[in-house]
Amino acid sequence: MRAPHSSGPASSWPRINGNVSFWMDQLGPVQRRSPLAGDTETDVVIVGAGFTGLWTAYYLLQADPGLSVTLVEQEYAGFGASGRNGGWFSAEPPGKMDQYAASQGKEAALRLQQEMFSTIDEVIAVADQHGIDASIRKDGLLYFATNSAQMSRLRERVRASADWGWPAEDMTLLSAAELSERVRIAGGVGAFFTPHAARVDPARLVRGLADVVESLGGTIYEDTTATEFGPHRVETDRGKVRAKHVIIALEGYLSRISGQGRRMLPMNSSMIITEPLDDGAWESVAWSGAETLGDAAHSFTYMQRTDDRRIALGGRGVPYNFRSSFDWDGRTNQQAITQLIERLHALFPGVAQTPIAQSWTGILGVPRDWSGTVSYDSATGVGMAGGYVGHGVSATNLAGRTLADFILGRDSHLTRLGWIDRSARKWEPEPIRWFGASALYRVYGAADALESRSSSGKTSFLAKAASAVAGR
Image (tube, rainbow, N blue to C red; front, side):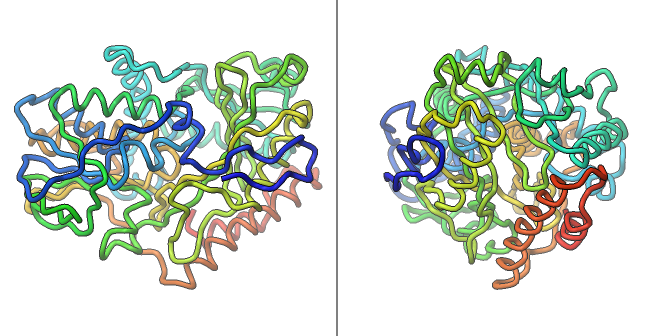
């Protein structure tokens, strides 16, 4: 889908809007796998062939090659958030540490954080072992500030992270000059850096992982829509699957399953990516490493740079659609595209004449308490994982290893982490849900504007009040 010509400073509007994502587009036409051909039985059925489902299948088959493991997927492997995200592979927890501590105790929460650290190297090792070329570079994560209030929040992040197990030597505050040595952010006043993150091409990783799962004996049925699940069964439009174990790995798409509409809020996160920067534009950015970037604004923007000198930038300009609807093909609302382009040019003025190659939108799953979980009921054989609130590229691997341990009957350290068997209350019914989610990000935008004009160094009362009401 092509969009109208931009009236902004760039020479063109995104050349492509949708088509799932730029990452998927680069892999060429999808060769779809066969759908389910009728009723069947299996040891394990997994609904969703994204990262959570594929990692679960991978670790099960590694541990017990004799298991029959079946995945059912409405579209094709990686079609959802796994193939559309910003390629941030970080050790940040998939939720609020105080929630995990309240649920399972502080030690269990601290163990969850430690596992998130090791997850990055685990995925890199698996990719290397199986020859998955996913453009992974572990150059760390850089959060930057463009005003004093944002810098104050980064200092608080260091203090809070230390309380939750981050080593002091792995958290560095950078001055404006030190930030500019890594990347030139217009108006940058400082930054926070940690080495616990990597950049990845998510589509190449998820497609490669799907191929590995099949090579190990797993079966992936595509074009097969799950409509309902229960103890030891999954109903689909192609037949019923009976299994000892049923794993639901749908994240933000869970709302499409009967009876699950208020368990997870499908939040839009939209992206743009530039054409490769010419030498002049690249010199103005001076982004020599492959650090993933994020700002300290309330409305939040995240970035990566590719090996061929593109900048991919994402954010949540239109975070939620009424009644949990979303564009299946990933087309981005025009308002969101405008906001993303304006943000890109505000941070990197030197790229204003670089055309935008593509825009797309994915959805992430947000529980009511903004904290992810892994659960398994041995009586029914039903397990579930999700609600990663934007940190799913890494958290899905940990979730997959944990679900595998549950299915295999292992009482391991993973099955006792802080996010195990948590249950958040349901989201409010419509239209309350839509008003609340929409208002939250409008207030965050207003708070960012107020802070940019203030020198107090204090977080806006608007943002504090909005976060308190939303439970963030």
